Image (tube, rainbow, N blue to C red; front, top):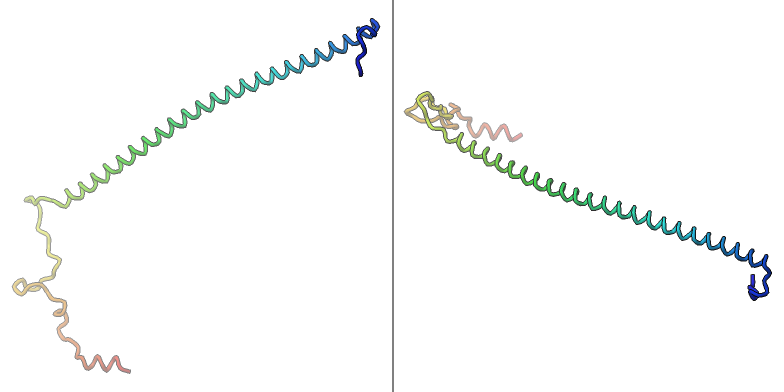
Length: 139
């Protein structure tokens, strides 16, 4: 709609033009308020999310540190246990003789203590002849 010279408008047309411009102004004002409200709402949501993120990061860092400390403590405890076990094994091996202890028997068989331990080759009284063995293996 092309604008005429304001002096050419009648009173009714000026009032009509005033009403339409006021409606357009109210509509634009309403739209502006809506955008401002949305922007404010989004900024509040962003701030809240940022605070939650920071809180989460602090908790995560704390949990990570606690986990690291627990792992270190567990590793040190495990090392101490291993060390004490190895010391216990060493102390068990170093048994001091007492009056009540009986001497251990020798694992070596001795028929006659004067002659010494039994030799493995002497366990068989009669050894087989070599010729007989050859005949059995040759078919």
